[in-house]
Image (cartoon, rainbow, N blue to C red; front, side, top):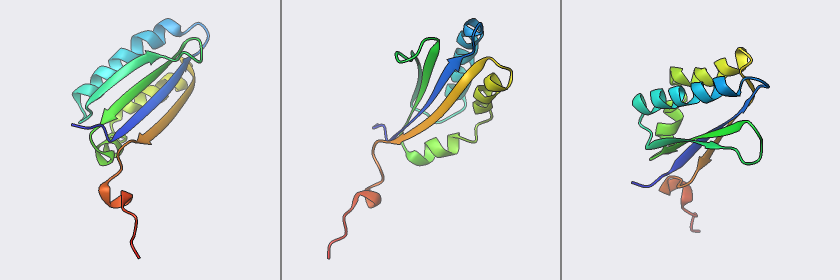
Amino acid sequence: MLISAINTVEIDAAPGRVGEVCSKLPHIVRELLTHSACMGYAITDNRRAKNSWIVSGYWESESQMRAHFDHPQLAGFMEMLRVGMASRIKFNTFIVNPAEDQCRVPHG
């Protein structure tokens, strides 16, 4: 299977809340892995910022990734902001292998 889409969530821990973020992230990722069609999820340190992580999801199709955005566990990231555990959260998506019909150049 090829990866066609990737989503990332960058999370910066609020001052004094690093331990809580470190505890919460694996729980969120386990739930997402259990209840979605993703090929895999990973948590990595964000080397550009201290006390910051990047959670990445890998998808076989863009449509699977987009459907995943309705998953209730994704609210866990926003909850971290709401309770002051995180100071910043940034969501990104990347389409690695667009559908063939989007890649075709019209002849004419």
